[in-house]
Amino acid sequence: MKIKDKTILITGADGGIGKTISTMLVDAGARLIAVGHAEQGLAALVDSLPGDHVYVTADLSKPEGIQAVVDEVHNQGGIDVLINNAGVAPFGFLEQQSTAAISAQININLLAPMLLIQALLPMLKQRSEPAIVNMGSTFGSIGYSCYSAYSASKFGLRGFTEALRRELADTSIRLLYLAPRATLTPINNEQVIAMNQELGNKMDQPKVVAQHLIKLLQNDKACTRYIGWPEKLFVVINSVLPQVVDRALFKQLPVIRRFAQQ
Ligand SMILES: NC(=O)c1ccc[n+]([C@@H]2O[C@H](COP(=O)([O-])OP(=O)(O)OC[C@H]3O[C@@H](n4cnc5c(N)ncnc54)[C@H](OP(=O)(O)O)[C@@H]3O)[C@@H](O)[C@H]2O)c1
Image (cartoon, rainbow, N blue to C red; front, side, top):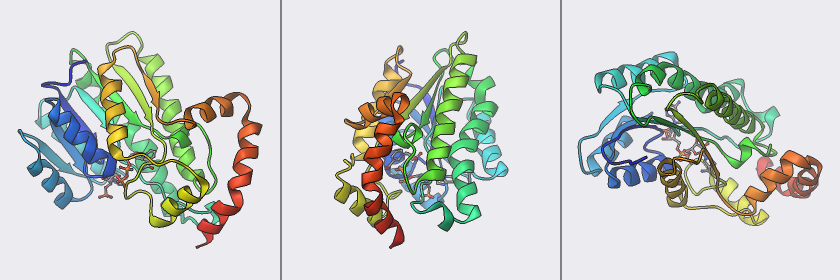
């Protein structure tokens, strides 16, 4: 698809990855509906971009937040592309995560994309080249220690994307899934960055993720992209020989535990 002149809604628009994607989409000629939590960050983002863009402040973990986004899409006369990018990823033992933190991960990372897609599908169907991008993760294919709730949310998002892609296969809507590996954004605190460095887990700049997203949108035949090597290989191995990945991750466990205890 051509990005020029498309109206694109992106959630988490003022986050580390969202901001970079927003800038690249506008550079490619898109008009944005930027969705996020914090008015200040969204206003600053929209002001910094050339062209005529709007923003919506919404808490996507709440039904009224979802409704505010849907209402604004109606006001703007619809969208061509929906990018479900907002997310949270608290690092820590399951036993130490509050019920609220676990619920938030499921609500923001999984339920919000499902509800937004459900509400916006009728409007997307009216467009000539509609597309939906769900921001997954390597942890949507490889369950990782101290990210159990997050992994569950991203496994769910991947399954939802696959099922809905099949359900909509006889329509013009493209259902896309992008799975970044660790990326240097505020979602990862200093502890996680230090842990990744010690474990030798590579971390990308947000620009890498944004470039992959643009390529995914532009390539009409593609539907899924995993970012990073050897993560891509581990995803395949984990699906056919999970015990090999169990063994590799077992060796990492003492280090992960040490950082999670801090
Ligand atoms: N960075 C990584 O290592 C990595 C790796 C794989 C996948 N991903 C995925 O990439 C996506 C973007 O993450 P990021 O790295 O850019 O993180 P980030 O910098 O923390 O950005 C996350 C964005 O989501 C927004 N958000 C969080 N909760 C929200 C809520 N309840 N309602 C509305 N907006 C909310 C945040 O707004 P506030 O900041 O105002 O709360 C922020 O704009 C996420 O889906 C994440 O799971 C990230």
